[in-house]
Amino acid sequence: MWAASCLASCCAACACEACRTVVSSISRRSARIAYCGLFAFSLIVSWILREVAAPLMEKIPWINHFAQTPDREWFETDAVLRVSLGNFLFFTILAIIMIGVKDQKDPRDRLHHGGWMMKVVSWCLMVIFMFFLPNGIVTFYETISKFGSGLFLLVQVVLLLDFVHGWNDNWVKKDEQFWYIALFVVSLVCYVATFSFSGLLFHFFTPSGHDCGLNTFFIVLTLIFVFVFAIVALHPAVNGSLLPASVISVYCTYLCYSGLASEPRDYECNGLHNHSKAVSTGSLTLGLVTTVLSVVYSAVRAGSSTTFLESSGEEKPLLPFSKQDDQQEDNKKDDKSTGAVTYSYSFFHLIFSLASMYSAMLLTGWSTSVGESGNLVDVGWPSVWVRILTGWATAGLYIWSLVAPLLFPEREF
Figure (cartoon, rainbow, N blue to C red):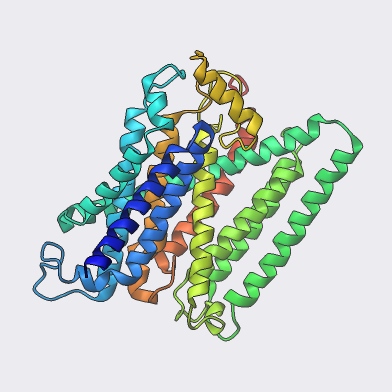
């Protein structure tokens, strides 16, 4: 017994020392990657607790204070929401602290890039504390998370529009035949993918012998958007390009598929139910990894995008992987230079806050699908409408980006 106690103490000491070494080695460059890693880790914790924490939470009196114990699915959703709430508060507090940071001499710049042992411990304590809160606070957070998730999806749409317009402008500026051919080839591939994908949607989500008018409406409207994009982009007054139109067409078609695939598995017009009666752990893992990558990319891209903010100083990528760039940044800090920050720290953390809400909604199927579809991720009618409405918002914003300069020629877009 004494030997086992000593061994456990040694293991704990080694683990603590390893953690201390890891967090102390985080540099200015890798700090931004570390925030992404912490966020991804929070999603993994949420998913694990979603699967295993229900029996324990049923025994906690301030959580299970009902006259009749709710279903297991209620506790699974509650566990995800509590972890998400802790994550949301952690990044929101950082966003508030970082308001107004303009240059690297600000003491808060050091807090943003350093103090990782304190941050990790604070994050863990905050998540643990969430399990001591009354259910009413968690219910309120669940409500506002749906609105926060909508804001995050809107950010994703704006980022996509900024990306495709920038992509097109960069290739056109080269003014070489090769790049014009590349524009045509990429646009052609996107349109082929769009119409092929649409055919598959008709095959899987409008099966014969069933009244699937709603699904047909979603698919046909998406195809109408595709033609409208091309017509408006090629109009002489707009002087647009097919590349952004084709990329947005593929994305809207994907959102249509994502919405239709989120329909409950027992819905007769969801053709996927014939192929996925049960979802394996591997499929769930793949879905979670895709979610993590999507959310992290959006948060990282938004934090440094000039679409939202005009940053002073030389523009640099939010995640520089060049050792030379890393050394230059560290040298500048050692020399106590007065260089301006290259992105908004506050907005960076704010995007992670919204992403925390969005991820919670995905893992709980917008707080309804857990009960409808067992352990499936992001399945249920709320998920369907969120995806479809996001596709319509994408179409509207893209068309607006084309016609706005014509309607308001005195303004810059």
